[in-house]
Image (cartoon, rainbow, N blue to C red; front, side):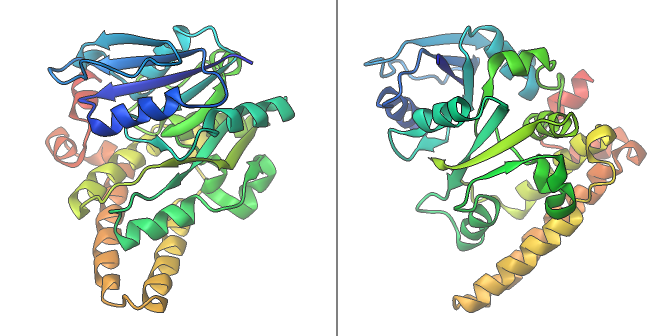
Length: 305
């Protein structure tokens, strides 16, 4: 089974070089590492090419799109499986690619699989628990039958580290293009409704987390909500708010139980920023463009749309 890794990059730093180093040490052979870099004056002069081929394509900033750029990568590949990663996701071990290969070899009816994200050492306690909440230790194969139990988490998938059968992805039309955000979940949701399966593979582990500020959470959740509002065929009738409330309650209990009750105030602040951003994003059509541009983290999307 031939596997390519596709990595969109923008001003990649030391974490990206570490990612490439870890990929070069993978036990399961990688056919090719495809890097699609949004052109700036920042890009490593040298990359580790010790075991596997690297192909680099530079694009202009106005050419980047979360869905379109990833479709471009799939079009540059002739592999059976494409593994999408972000530039700051670091494989925990040398078995990441092999773990994805195994799930596809053992389950010919699965077209999508995504991995587990573990927190960085410097990750704050709230985000650390969020990682655990969203990426549990137990693997799971999700279908449309899980919607009553899992709700919107049935559609959850993250291109921080996710693998797709390439022909399956392309024959289904690829990722939404253009898209403001959330291309992975939109695609997974459509495939769930089509009767397909999405695998969460807890053994496929990467280190990836962010200590976002309240302001950053506001912008991200605005864009997330816009992506959902633009795709009622996927998200209408499947509430996100209930899952969000469940996570806040679980996080608050965790903080108190582990001796950090004062952190609940930060949790409430961050959750409020998320909710306000989400609330406005779901109603973006009623907002003036000047306010949308204040709320979004993807100004280019609106200027091009």
